Image (cartoon, rainbow, N blue to C red):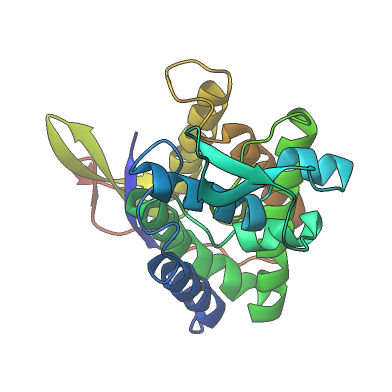
Length: 269
């Protein structure tokens, strides 16, 4: 796995929407006590039940998205006398479709949050620069919805909550691959130590997509049920398709200068 840290692709205007999305994600995580600790499966029983109730109300649930209705019994947030989490009728009104939007701003932990925000910071500014702030905001939401509903259609009986900006950000990555395949991206490659390399975007993002597909098949991971890799794939493809009509009019990234892999880069690299 390579870790991107910076791309060599300047923008012509300040990416206010990208910054606002990052700020909103961090704000929601910090000021949502139910998620500031962990996902279900960690922590004290009372906190676990509170987190389950919170996610049931605000996360996207594939069953609800497909059936357009809430379950008869949901976690109440309290401990049951016999142990486990108490169940009861939903004490709230929830629109499954709108839960997709709220779920885009929820994260299970700092690693989940910071990983997503790193990718959004590096690649989102150029897509916003190309689309403009309003169209970028709509693009981001559209990719998030495509990713979430794509996953729900492939797992219609799943009651596991879907949270995180990964699907929308995957769409940003797909658009970047279409619009700026030759842009250079500085990455850290773990090989005994972290080696800094400057690689073409098509290689970095293509490798990311292949890795998500590999994980989606269940290979190489033991926690396939906790990460919606299929949603990443759908979001990525949605971003590619939405960005494709803009490809002819997109100015190319600047020609790289200096050294690449220890030798001087040739034109076109």
